[in-house]
Amino acid sequence: MAEKNTFYITTPIYYVNDKPHIGHAYTTIMADVALRFHTSINRTKSLMTGAGEIIRSKKVNNVEGLLMTGTDENSLKTIQAAEKAKKSPEEYLKEMNDIWFDTWEKLGLSIVRSNKKESFIHTTEKRHIRAVEKLYGLIKAKGDIYKGKYIGLYCVGCEAFKKESDLVDGKCPDHKEALKEIEEDNLFFKLSEYREKLLEYIKTNPDFIKPEKRKREIINYIKDEMEDISISRSGDIKWGIPVPGEKDHVFYVWFDALINYISALDFGIDNDYKMKKFWPGTHLIGKDITKFHCALWPAMLMSAGLPLPKQIYVHGFFTLNGKKISKSLGNTIDPLELSEKYGNDVLRYFMLREIPFGDDGDFSIKKLEARYKGELADGLGNLLSRTVTMIEKYTENKKVPFKTIYSKTQNKELRFNEEEVKKYYENFEFDKVIKVIWEKVDKTNKYIADTEPWTLFKKNKKEKVYEILWNIVNALVYIAYYLKHIMPETENEIFKQLGIDVKNNKLDINEIQKAEPLFPRLEDPSTGSGQDK
Ligand code: MSP
Image (tube, rainbow, N blue to C red; front, side, top):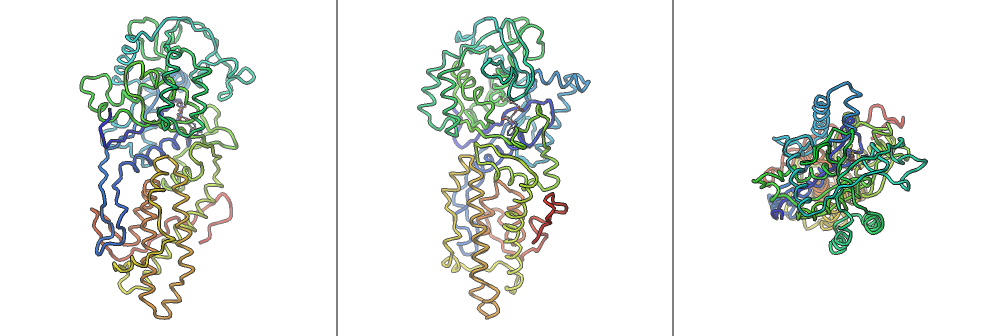
């Protein structure tokens, strides 16, 4: 069992028949936010209240976190894409690996560690092959593997066998491609033997699969549809991990891919300290791959006698004009182009704000720019720049006014409910985190309008003005603090402009630093309406 104070979060490993699109970025960014939240130092208490100390550490949250992502390379799609690119599979994979890793690096995600291998797995690696062989050995020893013949339809897009009832007009509804008829000798895993055990496990662990609607779907699938599953391919398929002791068989790509979550932790070697430290972990996946993760994978682990994942969170899709954004449908959007134009924080904000966790959401530049203008530039950006300007105008030393006594005047409307925010973060409900934060942004802007510090200043009521400024800054400090897992660069910039240095939990109030707006006017907004300030 995992050590206390560790947090292991995984994304699915991505197919490499193309570069990442925003759907993939959505999953990986969410995992990054979760990692940042779980491993951050908890210092929310005593903000702006202690004399001479703005931020006092209440509890240092020494959680060691690990985010694992990677690429799923033993798929037929890999070979097809390599052939299309006129490259050898090895050459093609090397290129794609770099593209995927570089994308995450450019998006500023915390998978980028000193040692790339620590947070990125690819399934043609030795450590992965070793783990697959070991897990297969355990499942086989349990008596859960048998030989049989597979006759049926296969969708390369899904890398899955299909039933007639799954099809629309004889085609896979997701990939719209004709299916391949297959008749070959396969090895089968006795998945159906785990029906009762899986149902029992889901029942006794109500938080295992989230959200509820996905859990219900999976329960129905396990009850009514789940059958034994072919775990090898033979015949003309040569690409894949060879099945030990079975000439002409390679593992079915999903059987090998799921094992990445533990091969990345060195499962299969004697000194598997990472496995002991981090497993079981939390999986974050899209709604199209729930059967594999919530039924097959747990059953494989049960068979091998290993602990099941801690939790599986299932998110919805980004769609474009109502259609899933996907490589197969050719309607992809490059996250790097968005990040170059709007910045990483804006991309993170938009993705997480736009889709309530578990639902689908339609992507459009128009929506992104509307949120940019309304919520970011006119909301938070404006709040910060007004505050900095007021401090500049109304104080002599151009510093945030600070006296312990001001905390007694704290405006209750501007206060956060810490437990609420934490709960939302824990449940991946980042859209709700953002909503709560923006309620405070709006209230703080309203507080400024209502209290009219400029009028009080004219009337020479300086102490009152300072008290109000303290209240505004206090609100902004909390806003930045709660936003930092979602918008890390914005948090830094807010503190910088306010002249507040929070390094090492020590307060340093310096002169404010007037700077460019947090969210500058967009040069060429696609809405064509310009960006007022
Ligand atoms: N290789 C498998 C996963 C194996 S995990 C052991 C796979 N790869 S994928 O590249 O097709 O998709 C990876 C993830 O990206 C899935 O969780 C999928 O739901 C997600 N997304 C792909 N397109 C998406 C959107 N348009 N929107 C949101 N997420 C989407 O499946």
